[in-house]
Image (cartoon, rainbow over the protein chains, first blue to last red):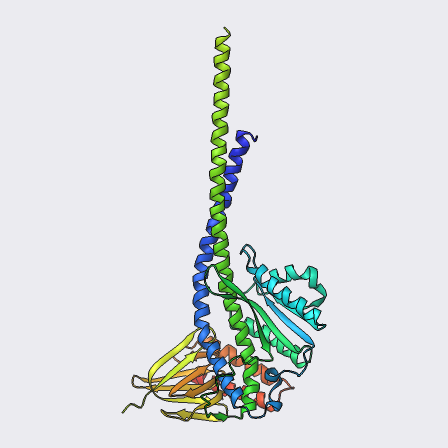
Length: 291
Length: 132
């Protein structure tokens, strides 16, 4: 059994750990509020963008000559996966969930005999993927320096993606991120951005007659790269809200566990203190009796 | 009676402006400035760098935009733009900074006509802001 001094030290150390986790929880809660607001504020833009693109792609008459970003290269051989993770740890299963989702997709792709290329955004994702997929990672991006998520960062990522698409380096591009549902639930998402999947093609019931200025294909050619930036930006916003939410609940758990541990250790400490006193008393009494 | 329609300007980060009582909007569209009144036909177009004017009962507001997309539909004008500044509040240092950056861009050799046009457009607008 550990000595009284050891127990005391352990209690102290657990208590200071608890203080740290509590502080981290508070910080995460404050950041979460802001991140959540940002994610909500960013939604109208990406929704509007999506609507316009949908209207446009419905309006395009010959799909054959549609821009490649929309229609794809016609091949399905090389898949580019952009894995968005955080730059910091201690956020529960946040990063692992994305990685798990991504890895499942990777093995599906490779088992189908297709080529795989990976871009990691955020250092944690790179750390987790480099062991298994080091030869597949073509680029790693990290935004450790930028404090807040901004559109320029998203544009940088999309620029890299579009440039390599124009060089015909891949056919399909998918992004992985966590969608923020609420503080305790974040859903890992895989979203295909190139070629654009028009999932809601069914709603052509109200076909609008738009006037286009300049021509449709010119607009689309300009709009699609923007849309990719927007989608990535949206993913980054969702991700940051998820990260903070995930960290908050992880730190909440840690604080609670530390509290339980302190309780347990305190009981143990008190018991052994009592035992020591009793032992001393017995020794004194039996000493007195023998006189 | 009502000659008003709805205007929404959204940034990637947030909703920049939302107004219900707009009577006319002058947008610097890609192929020339364009005025939009109520019951305009549905249209999608691009913006080039320029001054966006919004007329409403409460007066006239001017904004500087660098790029963007506009969509007009069912008497709602949506403007998606990543860079928009109110002319009253625009930062002078930002204007001159952006002006010198853009001028540097123009001096590059390998520009196609389209981007050259956009850049010189931007310089003109920035200069006119600066001289005010």
